[in-house]
Length: 392
Ligand SMILES: [Zn+2]
Image 1 (spheres, rainbow, N blue to C red):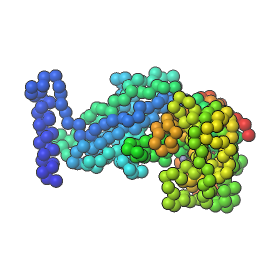
Image 2: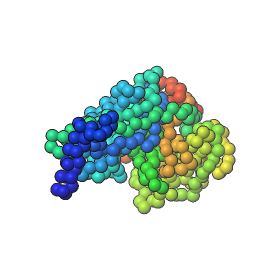
Image 3: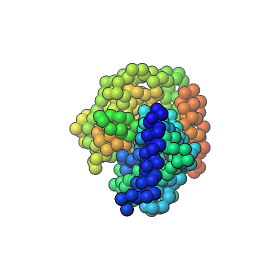
Image 4: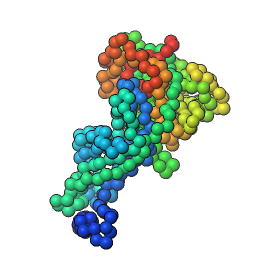
């Protein structure tokens, strides 16, 4: 340990000298960058139901040093100008060490983490073409007096491909877009190492739930599937598309608790994947057994019923998990944003904690209403918005 530190301290000092004297390397400035930065998946801008343009992505960080690194500030630079600043507290809420579900503002020695970013730009803003990052760090492995470091890195282009424009996945009123974009953690931060790389297939996933007319997610016994407002709602094709995967035959779970010992293969429960074209795929998960009326290779049309909302696979209560991704796999694919052509926003719940409470005890979900309801064209319903879709 002691040797390590001395070695590192000496290396730092050497690097400092090199950068000061530029011995023999006139034009190259060489600085130690103990935190290595990289963006794997370039953000794809889309419009959220708040009207803002969102760029959602992950800044990978590897602590290549023998001591802890505290990330004290992050500036996101778009085409040369600072477009977002995260202070110490903001970083602490968004930086997650690899494999952990808890955020922290520091990275232990020799560890990797992801900083989950949501850059929101005012409606009509010019979207930058390139992003980079400036970080203020405290590096424990550096010699005393040199522990405050600044670094730049993680340059990425912005992926300005067109966003999938889709129809509604459900019909009717009082739906809750739970764990939706952009700062909820269950989907957006579900970074999974599969087949040799880290994927965020669920980056823009929504768990659709529904309230009854009294604002309850369920009424009656908690363990009964039929108690839930959304149970049995038809899940609809969001476009004219090709069915590329159907899984059926998995039993319903008992609402109120997660199943134990479920395999990765069974996590989606009964599910359908549609090929929307343009390397975009839509997943519907947790459908009722025997309810799926489409088969692999079938062409479906916008609005066609795929199956009924159930509680199969790795599911706590009946809900529709819906996501769009760049491959026909629910795990080893990159989650893509999409915009729904037409819906109404009628309110916003008081947040994930309130939602979890209402889902757990069956009390009405506290909602701040939007009155009159706001008609929205072409947007991704953001986390905890209350949505009405056309039709009944
Ligand atoms: Zn989900």
